[in-house]
Image (cartoon, rainbow, N blue to C red; front, side):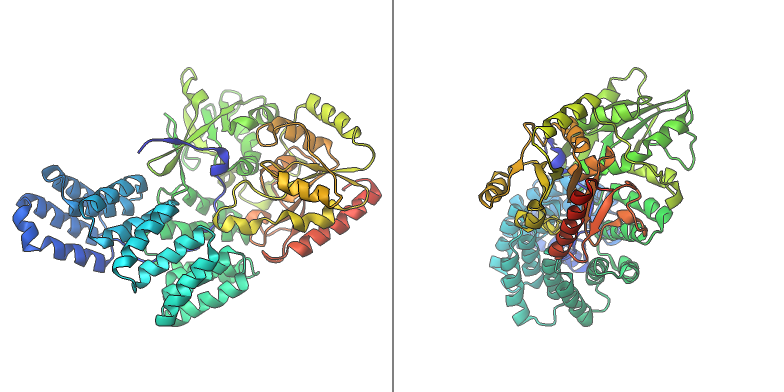
Length: 595
């Protein structure tokens, strides 16, 4: 499987994902099915006896949960008979359970080629493809399976999950409704119906369906976990934590366990259990999570609990999306102090941010990182660190600094931003803004470039921003990157003029940062642009989601203490939040400031 270069927009912050996919390639029923095939006399007559013995040993290992041993035995069988579809299938199961999803995908594909009529292989491969985001492939494989067994609950359920992830919500609901007409007591189907609603932000209705699933099966871990993810944005974080604690023992796979643990970490942070939460947040690097990052650095990872970093050459590697690098980067100054004058800090960030971080931390060496998707996993490497004479002594993921330097709310510095925009560019943009004439200059963001799956519920349509756009005395400046020509044309047709600066708003982040600092105010949801504005100390108002953990159980945004936030009471509360912004903006325009 070749490496694929990833754009920064393809890498973003973790969010607890809804769990609806049913089935387990290593379940007792699945292993019994494979065992029956190995006992088939016709197969035994054709295959080498030793290869069959290795495969039987592999299945014994799978039953015991020893997946690395199972993979070893399956590979030994393949060395004896590389045309054994069963051996490829067993290897695929072991790779999947070990978290090596890329290799698992390849092994399933090999098994399917050799066993084209065995639809259960298509089902396993379809489920894994859905988990890894290959939705078109997953849909085709599941339809293939259902053509042979049209009443199969798990396959129908999993097809609905694929349709949901494709944002084909109506098709997903109809698929589930038809099967519920036949199997009205299936907790699996009720649970997935809830995930279709929760992905759209309708947590009240979703909660009803999750509870219906639990009524039919009180021990159903997926439904209990999903209910937690609905309860938290509805204001019941304590109940959500209870649900996740109850769900974790019933996780069906390492992936589910890791995802549930991720949700638990975010809940701990939401509840203000900061030290516990940041420690638990290490699960984001679990290889069983498809979006987890591995770092290709020729140095050991720093363990702050056992190693003194003073005097060391420490590399800090930015992670997740651009906004996250700015949130987690607030600890870099602490690391510089920790290594002392005898040591050196190296910081790898998104290349478009290197100037901002270098000016903020002149004692550090700042360079860019790059990311590829290799064997289904995000791999981040640091070209400038590879060229350093003597290399680095140790490295650490940027977010892991939180557990070291922010163990309590008192450890968060009270400051107005920390990144430093280019002073010459700030002066330039102030002059350009003056040319727009009198008025309160407001920069506007309204969406993310990535709106896949449940991320869409965090952003509003442009039309909802009309009350803000029509504020008397305000001059609107477009800061939204991407193709927004239709939105701007609609605003122009409605009599609203929005100035777009003559820069590439996606790539010229030095100018976006300077322009943000020059504006009277920057408004938008919690995306890279608003985080950039807050990080450089610009006057920033952010619309936050009901499940945003960054408050850390306080009445402020500790990462950016000067930030003014407008929290949505629910995912649907755009009208209320934007209405509150309009009221505050009227007051700011009248006063001539945003403080």
